[in-house]
Each structure stands twice: as C-alpha cells, then as structure tokens.
Image (spheres, one colour):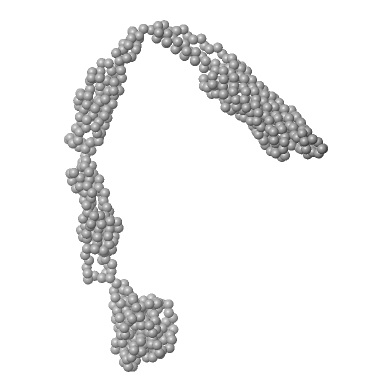
Length: 582
C-alpha cells in the first residue's frame, strides 16, 4: 500500500509541474469599462463614461499573441445638458503576455482601429454646439414649436488606439480574474460641429473575467520507480534495507545557575541533551583544560583571578553524533564602596541651609547602605547642613569666609567608603555707622557759612576724610518756619561749596562723594547738635537751632543715615558759581 502511495504521489507531482508550464492558446475576456474623455472643447468639459468591453486573444506562443477588443461606453448628461453620448471602439493589435509559473500574469499591448461616436439631445427650440461627437453645427436655430420629445442625433467615425497593459490572476486552469487594465485611449474622430480632426487624449480602465482555452499538453508522467525495501531504525527513522541506521544529532544546551560571580562564589552548569539518554559520555573543560565527566559541573571561583571563563562540554554516544556546547562565566573582584558627595548650594551665607546628597557604588560586597553625613563645623540633620553654628571673628566687621568640610560615609557588608566636599559659608560685612558732626548754624534768613561753621567743615570734617578718603559726606539743610522760602537749599549748597571748591581755604572733596538734601522745616527726627557754635548766631532758641545744616561722615562701605531722604549728589548741582565762600 505504501509503495502505491509513493507512486501516485510522484505521478501527481509531475502532473502539477507540467500543468504549471501550460499557457492558453485562446483567451476570451468580458468586463467593465471606465473612460475619462478629454474632448478638447471649451464648451464641454472632460467627462467620465461607463460601459463594457469584450476581447479575444490568440497566443502564438508563450509570449506573443494578437488581441481584438470591442467595447462601448455611455454618458447620459454632458455639461449639465441632456446630451446622450455613446462611443464604440473596435481595435486589434499585438499583445505580449508574460506567462510564468506564478498565478499573476501581466501583459502589455498596442491596439489600433476605429471609434464610432454618436450623440443625441432633446430639442426645445435651442441652438447647440458642444464641439464633441453628437454636437450641432454652429448657427443652427431650431424651431421653438418642435415637440419636447424631439431629439437630434449625430455620429462620426475615426481612428482609435489603445496602448497600455494589465494583470490577470489565475483562479483555475481556465478562469482568471483581471483586477485592472489601464490604457492610453487616443481618438481622432472629426468634430460634429466643424469637421476638424484633432487628437483626443483619453484614459480607459477595464476589469472583469478572462476565460483561458486550449494550451500545451502536459508532460507525460515518468514511469513509477522500482519498489524499494526499507527497514525501521530503533529511533524511528526508516532507511533502505541495505543501509545502516543513521546516527541522531543531539539537541544540546548548557544552563548555569549564574553566569556572573564574585570571587569565592560557585555556580552549577548542567548539560541538557533533549533527545539523549543515560548512555552518553561527558567531558567538561574550563578554558580548554579538562574539568569533569558528569552530566553537570560545579564551577568554583575561589582563588581564581577576575575575568571571563569558558565552560565547554563534549558529549558522545553510540547512537548519536558527537555534540558540543559552551557558555561563559564572568568572575568579578571585590570593589569597596566609592562615590561622590554634593552640596546644593555649595556657597551659603551664615545661618542658611544646604542640601547634601551622595552616590556610592561598589562590587561584590552586598547592598550598600544609605550614606550618612558629617560636618567639620556646623550641624547636619538628615541631609540638611545648618550653618548657624559656624564660628566667625566677632571683632571683625569685614566680610568673612569659612570652608566647611562635609564627609559622606556608606558601607557594604565588608567595608565603608567615604567621600568629601566643601561648603563655603560667608558672613557678610557689618556696614559702618555714619558719624555725626556738630551742626553748622545760621542767623535768621542767612545762608552764609560763618567762621565757626567753616571750622567744623574745614577742620573736623577734613580729619575724617583724610583718614578715609573713600567715605561720603552728607549735608542736610534746614530752616525755621519764620524764614524765607528756599533758604534751606542755599545753606546746604553753600556748605557743599566749602568742601568741594578746592581753592583757597576750601576743601577739594570730590562732588561725587558728597550727598545733599534740604527738607527745610522738617527735621526728620534728628536732634540738634549745636556744639561750640551756638554763640556765633546769638542766644539759643528753638527757632535758632532749626536754622542749620546737619553734617554726617559715612565711612567706606557704610550706610547713609536713615533720616536722610530725597538726597542727590553734589555733582548734579551748580556749585561752581558759588566758588569758595568767604
């Protein structure tokens, strides 16, 4: 029975091979047509028409044949008018078909012949000139009394050509489905209106069913092979009786409990022979050196250098072809925790906080614990450094800076790693307080600086400026309520002229280092400081003490008195005209 099945199978195979080489002698196609017409007329736009076609093809050989095509398409409404247009083509010509062993058969063709166009329209007393097959000659005027059902029919015949190709998909030996045929459709049909002949460049698409007829005879099936006696091998294979049973290939693989070890660890490597059995011999090696002969092998990394080790096994058996497999084991050395620590921000002012963070890595020491932090000065709570406890020189009013070392520690199961960074703590300079000098006093309605006032400005103020030439002088003019308007401003400007004129006995303090204001009767909460000049302006009274100019010296880096408002630099005042007051 098995011999018969093999004979039938071979015959069927040859028959299928021969059938695959057949090509049809004749072909008959029936299908749908779609045409895109371009009439070359300004009156009628391009339009689409639908219909059908039939083809007959006679194939001379596998590649070359002749095709005859006849089809018709129709359009009922044209340019919005009731114009029924029908175009019929009848063409023939050569076709090249690429018959092959595939179900997909492409072809190309060039067909020549004629086209017949006819058009009809319902007339309601109108003149029509469509400029396409079926149009009326120009100037034709119809009788408006014609019946509505009256139609005018016209037709023309001319040259036509189809050039393109398509694809057939075989469904069976005698039937194929054609999903598309695309052709350039050339017409040279005279215009029904003018009789002129011009090229009309159109496009045609077709799809349908192709019937395949005739063809070459199949190659005769070869004679059945002679019967062969076989035998069944122990592992299920069937071979000719006169041949030995073949050895089987081993399905071999290696698995390890871990391929990544730290020094001192072990891993179990097992050989898996999927179709093997116990009658196998194993030979293990490590980096080419013999290491064992059991189905599994224990690799111990104790005392071994870090690196990659190649574990291989070679297996042999009476009924199997020899097999080999290999895997790699990576041995890593211990690396203590190392890392970095960062402070954000790394520069803070005294009393401010900074956030500490650290990152540690290690190898073969187990999990690394969360880092802890220490500071050489100040305090740390969690990951926050507090600089409030950092000590500075209390007697130094200038800016002071101190670098605090932050140490981070992280431990694994074997050792502790450290990392350090620094935080710069800044203690801002303490601004020097403004120095109050005696007031320069004035008689009522007078702005002239008298000799006593000059002594304050030219002697006492000079001594401060000579010790600190970067300081600033502040002059604030006042007046009593019984004095003329503007007197306070004049007093402040005259005092400024004395210390900035730079001629005679006057000083030459830069105007940019002199600030002037004149609040007038408003004292801004500043007490009177008459000094030794009260007698130079008469008996003391509340009004006489208000007729003054406050004198302040602000050391370099110091702050102006809080009572001074609306001040401006003496460089913005016209003091040159005052000169050095006498």
